[in-house]
Length: 591
Image (cartoon, rainbow, N blue to C red; front, side, top):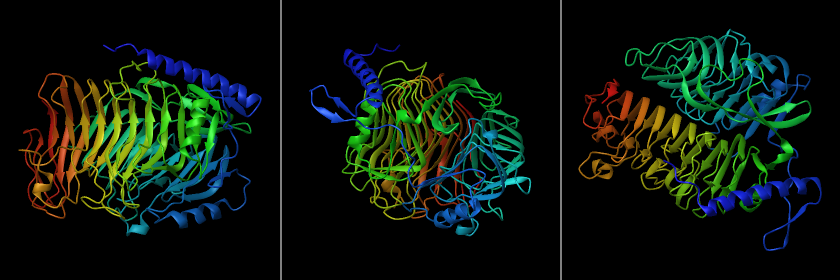
C-alpha cells in the first residue's frame, strides 16, 4: 500500500505547476520574473540553436562522408577524451554513406519514424583501433535511422553503453568485429532487423521490444523480451532466455524535425509490449517544442539549469562536458532531461550530480555522469529517502543513463545510483567503476556500491553494473524485477582479505535483502577476473532470501581464464567454477 503524498510534497508540486504557468507567460512577454521573495530574476530563455557539436545534415549537404570521417578520426580511439558529437540527419535518402562511429558520438535521424531517414549505406562500429578486440567499444549510439547495408549486413561491434535504438536494418546485423575478436555488449531496443542478427563472439546481449529475422548464436547470456522472431527460451543450451513481452516499457525521448521546427518526442508507456513502437507509423506519445527546453551548452552552470527547471522548462543537454558545483534538482513532474552526444556531467566538490523528486514521469535519458575526484555519497538519486508516492500510471525512467568512476581521471562515489521512488523504470544503464584508463586502483577510484534500489515495483531492463568494491547491486524494495543483468566483479582486488564480507568470501554482484518477500530476475550473469590475485575465491555471484516470492531464471557465473573462482552461483546453490577454462556454472531456476 502506498502512503498518500505529504502536504509539503503537495505544496512543492503546486509551486512547480505555478512556475510552469509563469514560464509560459515569460516566454511570451518579458524576460524577468519575481521570486517568492519579490526580487526580479532574469528568465532563462527556451529554445535556440543546438551548439557547435551538433552537426545537422540533409541530402544536399556537400561532402557528408568527409565530415563524418573527420569526426571519426578524432574519436576512434579517444576513449577518455573530452570531445562530444551528435550527427543528426534530416529526413530523406542518403546514398553511399559509411558512417563509422567512434567514442562519444551519437548518430540519429531527425524523422518521427526511422523510415523517414534512409541510408543506402552503413553505420559501422569496428575495432581496428584495438587490434580487433571490441570489448572497449563503449559510449556511442545509433538511433532512428533506416539502413540498406552495402554488403547486406551492417557491422555494429560494440560493448557496454552503446545502444542501438529505433533502427531499421533492411538486411542483417553483425555484432562482432572484423576477424571475430571478442566483444562484450550490448543492447538493442525498438528496432527492426529484417535479416539475421549474428552475435558471433558477443559474450552477452539484451534485445527488447524489437523484431529480428533470426538470431545466429549465443555465447553465455542472450536475453530477449518482447522480440518478434526471437529464439525460443532454451537456457542454458543454447543460452537463450526469452520472454514473450516486456511487462512495462517506455521508449527513450528523441529529437526530431516537424517541418523546420525542432521538437522532442516523448513516447507513451507500453504494457506487455512486443515488437517496435513505430510499426503502424506515427508512434503514440507527446511532442514538445524546442522552445519549451533550456538548451544547455558548455559553460552552463547548475544554478542556471535549476532555474530553468523551476521556471517550467525541460532540459536538452548539447554534446559537451558539464561541471556542476551544486546538485541538478528536478522536482517537477514530467520533466524531460535529454542528452545529445553522450553529454557528460561531472559533480565537483563531492555533490550529487542529479536528484529527482518523488514526482510522476521524469525522463532522464542520454547522459553520462562522471564522478569527480572528491567523493560523492551518491551520483544520481531518484526520489528522496522514504519516497512513497504511487507512480504506476506514469513512472520516472532512466534510459541510456551511464555512470563512470575513474578512467578519465580520479573519481570516487560511495553509491552511484539510488532509486527511492516506486515504479521507476531503469532501461539500459552501464554503471562502471573503471578497471583501466587513468585514475583507477582499489582505493584510487573507491566506489563501494553501484546501484541501490529502495523503491517498490522498480523494473530494470538491461542492467549493466561492474567492478564495485563491495556490492554491485543491492535491492531492498518489494516486487522488483530485472530482465538481463551483466556484471564483472572488480579486477583489482589485491587479495582475499580485501573482499572478505564477514564470514562470506566476497560481496555478491546482485544481492536481494533478506527482508524482501517478492523479487524476480531473468537472464543474469556475473563474471570474475581477479588478475591481481588469481587465487581469490568468490563465494557466490548472487545472494537472495529463499522465499516463495523470490525467483530467478537463467543465472550464470563465469571465471575468466581461471583468474579467481566462484564457489556457487546463488547462495550455496550451483556448482563451482574450476580451473582455467572459461565454462559457465549455471542455475536455470531458483529456488
